[in-house]
Amino acid sequence: MRRVASILGSLLIAATIAGLSTVVQAAEGPAALPPSVRIKPVMVPIVTRGQVERYTQIEVMLEVANATRLGEVQVAIPRLHDATLRAVYLGIEEGWIVRGNIANMPALRRKIDEESVKLFGKDVVSRILITPLSRQSSFP
Image 1: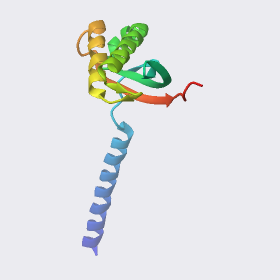
Image 2: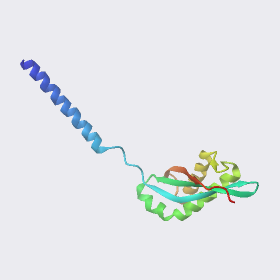
Image 3: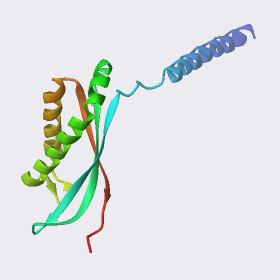
Image 4: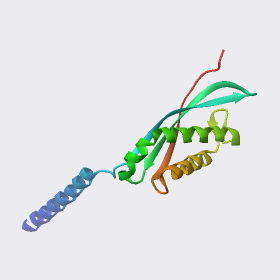
């Protein structure tokens, strides 16, 4: 009987310790997301036979690798918006964006990254997130 009680006691202690480690892991949670900067949505024209047929929108977010440089990146948002617009229009010319759809996402990201490196230097922006937002119907 004592042996059963000691085994049950040992199991209870082991379960308590295992439960506490789970609670500690849950309290720590997943790693914090890196700081990011959102650029205003960019209007992308859809051109057919030389005429603007309609627009679509994309949103660009830049994850900042070094949180101490976040303020510098935030101050430069107007320049980043301009660089993004230039990259989008280059993408239309180069065929990366076809009828409002991004056909070559890596090339567009690479161009935006090149512009961010020109502004801030290497390894300041760690990731570029591009999200299609909406489409505007055809003009009358």
